[in-house]
Image 1 (spheres, one colour):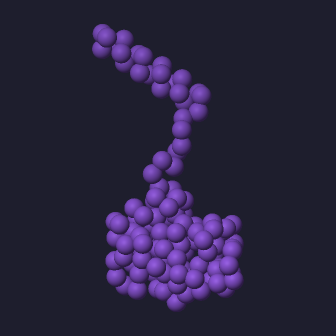
Image 2 (cartoon, rainbow, N blue to C red; image 1 turned 180 degrees about the horizontal axis):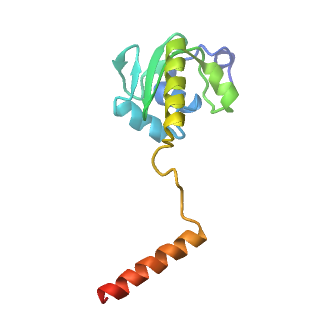
Length: 140
Protein backbone atom coordinates (compact mmCIF):
# COMPACT_ATOMS: atom_id res chain seq x y z
CA UNK A 1 0.00 0.00 0.00
CA UNK A 2 1.45 3.39 -0.93
CA UNK A 3 1.87 6.33 1.43
CA UNK A 4 -0.85 8.20 -0.48
CA UNK A 5 -3.40 5.47 0.26
CA UNK A 6 -2.44 5.40 3.93
CA UNK A 7 -3.27 9.10 4.24
CA UNK A 8 -6.57 8.52 2.46
CA UNK A 9 -6.17 11.31 -0.12
CA UNK A 10 -6.03 9.01 -3.18
CA UNK A 11 -8.85 9.09 -5.72
CA UNK A 12 -10.98 5.95 -5.81
CA UNK A 13 -13.92 4.74 -7.88
CA UNK A 14 -17.31 5.30 -6.24
CA UNK A 15 -18.32 1.64 -6.39
CA UNK A 16 -15.03 0.52 -4.81
CA UNK A 17 -15.38 3.10 -2.05
CA UNK A 18 -18.98 2.04 -1.26
CA UNK A 19 -17.81 -1.57 -1.05
CA UNK A 20 -14.75 -0.75 1.09
CA UNK A 21 -16.86 1.42 3.43
CA UNK A 22 -19.23 -1.55 3.86
CA UNK A 23 -22.40 0.05 2.53
CA UNK A 24 -22.78 -2.85 0.09
CA UNK A 25 -21.68 -6.46 0.47
CA UNK A 26 -20.32 -6.74 -3.07
CA UNK A 27 -19.09 -4.32 -5.71
CA UNK A 28 -21.80 -5.64 -8.01
CA UNK A 29 -24.50 -4.48 -5.56
CA UNK A 30 -22.76 -1.11 -5.28
CA UNK A 31 -22.74 -0.73 -9.08
CA UNK A 32 -26.44 -1.62 -9.28
CA UNK A 33 -27.29 0.94 -6.58
CA UNK A 34 -25.30 3.70 -8.30
CA UNK A 35 -26.83 2.89 -11.70
CA UNK A 36 -30.28 2.82 -10.10
CA UNK A 37 -29.88 6.36 -8.77
CA UNK A 38 -29.64 5.28 -5.14
CA UNK A 39 -26.31 7.06 -4.65
CA UNK A 40 -25.74 10.76 -5.30
CA UNK A 41 -22.38 12.51 -5.34
CA UNK A 42 -22.50 16.20 -4.39
CA UNK A 43 -26.27 16.19 -5.00
CA UNK A 44 -26.10 14.71 -8.51
CA UNK A 45 -26.49 11.24 -9.98
CA UNK A 46 -23.21 9.57 -10.73
CA UNK A 47 -21.71 6.61 -12.53
CA UNK A 48 -19.88 3.80 -10.71
CA UNK A 49 -16.58 4.97 -12.19
CA UNK A 50 -16.91 8.47 -10.71
CA UNK A 51 -13.92 9.24 -8.52
CA UNK A 52 -14.36 10.16 -4.88
CA UNK A 53 -11.80 11.74 -2.58
CA UNK A 54 -11.76 13.26 0.86
CA UNK A 55 -14.41 15.98 1.11
CA UNK A 56 -16.85 14.45 -1.39
CA UNK A 57 -20.48 14.56 -0.17
CA UNK A 58 -22.56 11.41 -0.71
CA UNK A 59 -26.23 10.59 -0.23
CA UNK A 60 -26.97 6.87 -0.10
CA UNK A 61 -30.49 5.36 -0.20
CA UNK A 62 -30.71 1.69 0.78
CA UNK A 63 -34.20 0.36 1.36
CA UNK A 64 -35.94 2.73 3.74
CA UNK A 65 -32.63 4.00 5.14
CA UNK A 66 -30.75 7.09 3.98
CA UNK A 67 -27.23 8.27 4.81
CA UNK A 68 -25.85 11.76 4.19
CA UNK A 69 -22.10 11.70 4.65
CA UNK A 70 -18.77 13.23 3.76
CA UNK A 71 -15.87 11.06 2.59
CA UNK A 72 -12.92 11.39 4.98
CA UNK A 73 -10.54 8.85 3.45
CA UNK A 74 -10.29 6.17 0.78
CA UNK A 75 -9.24 2.56 1.05
CA UNK A 76 -8.69 0.05 -1.72
CA UNK A 77 -9.25 -2.85 0.69
CA UNK A 78 -12.36 -3.86 2.55
CA UNK A 79 -11.50 -3.56 6.23
CA UNK A 80 -13.40 -4.51 9.42
CA UNK A 81 -16.48 -2.41 10.21
CA UNK A 82 -14.84 -0.21 12.89
CA UNK A 83 -12.08 0.71 10.43
CA UNK A 84 -14.54 1.20 7.56
CA UNK A 85 -16.52 3.68 9.70
CA UNK A 86 -13.42 5.90 9.78
CA UNK A 87 -13.68 6.41 6.00
CA UNK A 88 -16.64 8.81 6.38
CA UNK A 89 -18.50 11.10 8.76
CA UNK A 90 -22.27 11.08 8.78
CA UNK A 91 -24.25 14.25 9.31
CA UNK A 92 -25.98 14.51 12.69
CA UNK A 93 -29.47 14.93 11.21
CA UNK A 94 -28.98 11.87 9.00
CA UNK A 95 -27.93 9.76 12.00
CA UNK A 96 -30.88 11.00 14.10
CA UNK A 97 -33.31 10.31 11.24
CA UNK A 98 -32.07 6.71 10.89
CA UNK A 99 -32.25 6.15 14.66
CA UNK A 100 -35.81 7.50 14.78
CA UNK A 101 -36.81 5.18 11.93
CA UNK A 102 -35.24 2.19 13.71
CA UNK A 103 -37.01 3.13 16.96
CA UNK A 104 -40.33 3.47 15.11
CA UNK A 105 -39.88 0.04 13.50
CA UNK A 106 -39.04 -1.53 16.85
CA UNK A 107 -42.11 -0.04 18.51
CA UNK A 108 -44.47 -1.08 15.71
CA UNK A 109 -43.08 -4.63 15.77
CA UNK A 110 -42.34 -4.54 12.04
CA UNK A 111 -39.13 -6.47 11.48
CA UNK A 112 -39.43 -6.33 7.72
CA UNK A 113 -40.12 -8.97 5.10
CA UNK A 114 -39.22 -12.54 5.90
CA UNK A 115 -38.91 -11.87 9.62
CA UNK A 116 -40.37 -15.27 10.46
CA UNK A 117 -37.57 -17.14 8.76
CA UNK A 118 -37.75 -20.67 7.51
CA UNK A 119 -40.21 -23.10 9.07
CA UNK A 120 -38.67 -25.52 11.52
CA UNK A 121 -39.09 -29.29 11.30
CA UNK A 122 -42.36 -29.35 13.24
CA UNK A 123 -43.86 -26.54 11.17
CA UNK A 124 -42.83 -28.24 7.91
CA UNK A 125 -44.55 -31.44 8.97
CA UNK A 126 -47.72 -29.52 9.85
CA UNK A 127 -47.63 -27.82 6.45
CA UNK A 128 -47.15 -31.16 4.68
CA UNK A 129 -49.96 -32.74 6.71
CA UNK A 130 -52.26 -29.85 5.86
CA UNK A 131 -51.45 -29.83 2.13
CA UNK A 132 -51.76 -33.63 1.94
CA UNK A 133 -55.23 -33.51 3.53
CA UNK A 134 -56.38 -30.78 1.17
CA UNK A 135 -55.21 -32.88 -1.79
CA UNK A 136 -57.19 -35.89 -0.51
CA UNK A 137 -60.33 -33.81 0.05
CA UNK A 138 -60.18 -32.29 -3.43
CA UNK A 139 -59.84 -35.79 -4.97
CA UNK A 140 -56.34 -35.50 -6.43
